[in-house]
Image (cartoon, rainbow, N blue to C red; front, top):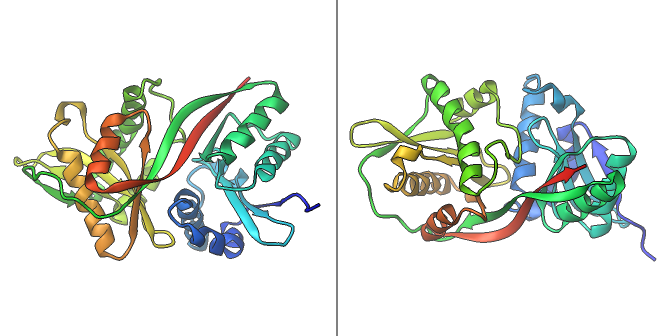
Length: 300
């Protein structure tokens, strides 16, 4: 009988990348969230930058090994993200739940790839006498052949430090509006919004763009994470309510995606499965489904 997978919880993202980097690179699109966070955290440590959120000091990076020693799964918990699990054997997902419960680690939300995240959440709920509720079913897409949308007036411009207030305002509005459009409470976000320091860092790194209409007014915001393992993830994608239905989002996302690909990276993004509008827009641009994810709640 083969042994159960072993779990290694690490606090140093550099150590995690050294051990799990090849595993993450084998499926870099599906593993985009953990890879992006790991490499970003590794850079912050190398630059001696304090965590934006003190909770980062209590986070972890998970390596799952088979009895052969091969890495067969991974996950993380950071200041912004509750536990986030990538694909792993069912027995490992259950073992994660038992380990977290056994050491008294409170888990109210858990995100990640199906079915691992569901297996872990179910066991956490059983151990704590609670139940699992679905906060969001999301779907990860990768860009295939980019199909240009119908052109609209205006142009794409990169956000600057002077745009920090508007970027922060629209980033916060994005989560609330997206939840409402899917029939959820406005505060039902799968993770915490980045603080202003993190947003400023992303702006300085060229991670946000505005679409300007023919009058030069900012009417839309598209963001993108820097490439990790050759994959860049687009998001957030936000258009204020009064500006919707005019093609700003389609044109902005198409142009941002084109620029990312021109630099040699693959492009992916998440959609909320309960939002048919965004799913339709991205499918028309050439984005194709890769994997289903879930953001789950553990309710006592």
